Length: 425
Image (cartoon, rainbow, N blue to C red; front, side):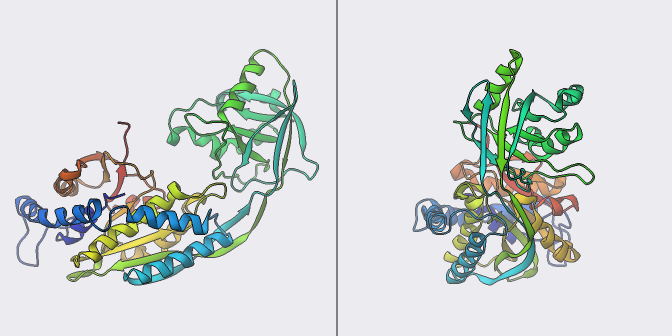
């Protein structure tokens, strides 16, 4: 959790983000000038790394996160826990001495899962572990009892459309990658409803599980019936697939009490260290504060939120003042598709030229392999020089294509974006 110090160096450089490479109004800076300027921050880089890794800030972000997660718990969009989390962070950021700590109002979805239960009735009684997917409708109060059809893909479902009518579709899709396979979670209910299914159960979007279904958001489609939908464990999906391939009839009873309420008021949480030379220019670092309701939200995305806070704390503790404003945003409603970030974007996009780079941490908080970056060739060359300052902790690689639900709005409009990339060791 100690690798966001490069944000500080980005805030020091003159208009480096691919918009202009000019200096202070005199003559354009050459790349060699910029390279030398970056290298001149090596002592500052060492000071930040020493404070984070060896000094009084060692493990601070972890300890802050542990207290937060233990105190607040899960933070589902629209919940009282999310309200408590935002109040907690607003107070904590003020106490930390950060500047311009404030809340920006947004509206977020409010969905509650309610009672959930699934039981295989044929060929034997077996309790099926389920987690309803976000925005799912409920079953009728008496539940649904129906035969199962197991498919491995949307193509197979459509080929067997006549078989699926009136049944519960179970998807046993192979896991390829999160980005590719997650479409079964987001679109599974819609595709099943198109062929007349009464419910859908999706194999969890994970490479493995220990009988542990994973929740997530899904989206209905206008004009398509809304059917109940939930995730099941990898083990149960595989078991039902084996049974189905043997020609065994499978019957499942499903009961879900999910409810959707009107959108709730919430907030994006903002704090800054104001720049001393170009205060209107923004280097944005972020993570999302909301989480699902069935865990602590410590990794998704408490870790990303708290290392973003730590980045500003390290700079404040060292008495450093960047040229540009470092702005931290803790997004709300990310799990529902980045609704808080989209509203932030709509509010601030008129000043888009002031955003030099946007960063997001939402891939876990392990030791990163490097920085994924989206931007033009000049900006990429400069990022490589900045990353070289992290040689003491061996985090220097620059990869293509930053990704992040909450920063994609900016990157689509040409603002450079970055996110730490974690590769298997």
